[in-house]
Amino acid sequence: MVGIQTALAPRPAPTGANEPLSDRNFWRLCDLVYQTCGIKLTAKKRSMIDGRLRRRMRSLDIANINDYCRLLFDGNPSADLELVYFVDAVTTNKTDFFREPAHFVFLQNCVLPGWREEGRRRAKVWSAASSTGAEAYTIAMVIDDYFHDRGGFDYSILATDICTDVLENGKVALYPDHMLEPIPEEFRRRYVLIPRDPARHEFRIAGALRSKVNFQRLNLMDDRYTFDRNFDLLFLRNVLIYFDRPTQEAVLTKLCEHLRPGGYLFLGHSESLVGAKFPLDMVANTIFCRR
Ligand SMILES: C[S@@+](CC[C@H](N)C(=O)[O-])C[C@H]1O[C@@H](n2cnc3c(N)ncnc32)[C@H](O)[C@@H]1O
Image (cartoon, rainbow, N blue to C red):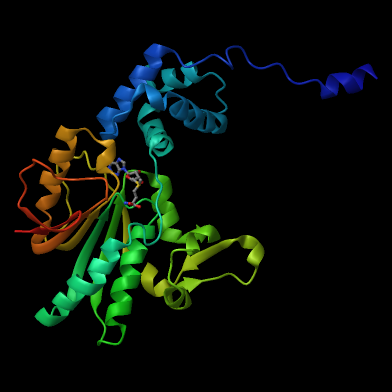
């Protein structure tokens, strides 16, 4: 009897397992996030950061969050590698297919007919801060659909993000089936693969579109971007909101150099360029054309 009780008794938590994140470490973490990815965290995000890091700590078998901070800050040789996982843990990757649909209506009704009239045969698109690729694959669906009966079209989409997890997800292009809902029926038939086993509750983007999208890691904080300078479309949606004003302006200045004159920039609906001087003309709400 005693033996059974001993076996069932909860294991004592390691010392310091429930120790709260110290104020000093919280502000050091905020500073690290800001210096690394430009994301400005406030005290309101404290429990979110705490929760997300504890998930990461479980996979490292670290019980005390302040020990985890020592791993990042105290000259540990593996700190650089851990920084990649840390960034994966603290970034917010919410995305959707056909998110902010007015952008895709503009693409379909204004941009693509314009390219057709110009006799353009190919285009390069950049989805910067792509998250898992729902944005990039939405663009691919709209372009592919428009040119499907119009002689075809050669296009490529670069999808970049700082978070390595979401890039791996984008390459595999498997999504939970609740993300299917905003994809129009006709597009589902053409571009979505549903597994025979419904218990998997997921779907995959068709190979023809997967081959058009190239996922790469890029930190928008980098001094310069080594990609082509003549993108036709640039989607930078729902990431500027995490940055402060000087960071937003620095990122947009660098990105404008990669958009060809006549190319379009799409920002998220709560993002704006008010008061800033860029070589861009607003052509619709949150859509800009490069001068
Ligand atoms: C909310 S998601 C937006 C995804 C997509 N653009 C959309 O609108 O649905 C923001 C993305 O920005 C990425 N991000 C944050 N800071 C970044 C940085 N410094 N460089 C590159 N990507 C970053 C995050 O990892 C995240 O996947």
